[in-house]
Image 1: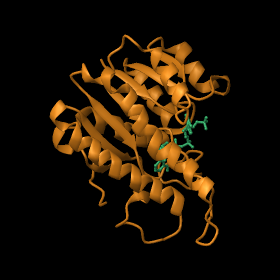
Image 2: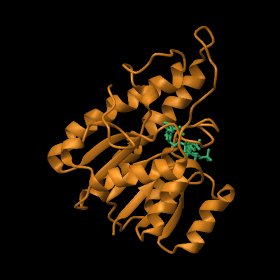
Image 3: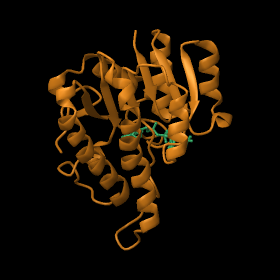
Length: 230
Ligand SMILES: NC(=O)c1ccc[n+]([C@@H]2O[C@H](COP(=O)([O-])OP(=O)(O)OC[C@H]3O[C@@H](n4cnc5c(N)ncnc54)[C@H](OP(=O)(O)O)[C@@H]3O)[C@@H](O)[C@H]2O)c1
């Protein structure tokens, strides 16, 4: 059994990660920015004593620091940087707004890297040392046939660039860093037309995380383990 630390767990993929990992007996430190509005997550923590809730807004440094104080004496085996936002929809070239762009970068790129910096010493003593980042195929420059989605696409491309460096810089210390595309999933972000449900996506990602090797560190992977072109 291992210790997992996950961001953005009150709904969508984050909530499903907590559910699947809790049911198989893992210890889960599940974070979200507003526990008052996290009834499904609170229900899970009542049903499974191995789920520990921590309030954390990943765009606030002080919130991340305070949240991490709650796990001061813990070793973390797997960090799942899941929290993310899409930003405004249907913004075309000509209508781009710098503030919107900054907000999405803060959440999708800067926050996961800063959190990883803050938590890294808790992961160092683990024999597992897995750093997982939820990215998107929409961040693949090669795969972009449709154009548009400037803000979200560029945020996930930037995340990939940064995590690639993390994977190289921390490799000799035994860390494995991987970027996972969850599929097009029916969540608030993915919408009702998504191709798969959260159970299928998270089942795939959990099994991929379980078997992730040092050779897969620094790779951009689909939830079924296939490599996605940059
Ligand atoms: N669904 C898809 O098809 C799809 C495809 C590719 C990649 N992804 C990626 O997968 C991840 C999860 O997506 P999802 O579909 O589960 O999205 P979702 O249903 O919209 O959920 C997003 C989660 O992130 C949290 N969050 C956002 N900003 C936060 C902040 N500042 N601090 C803490 N938590 C924050 C949200 O919390 P609140 O409830 O407080 O807002 C929510 O729990 C994201 O990184 C997303 O980019 C999703």
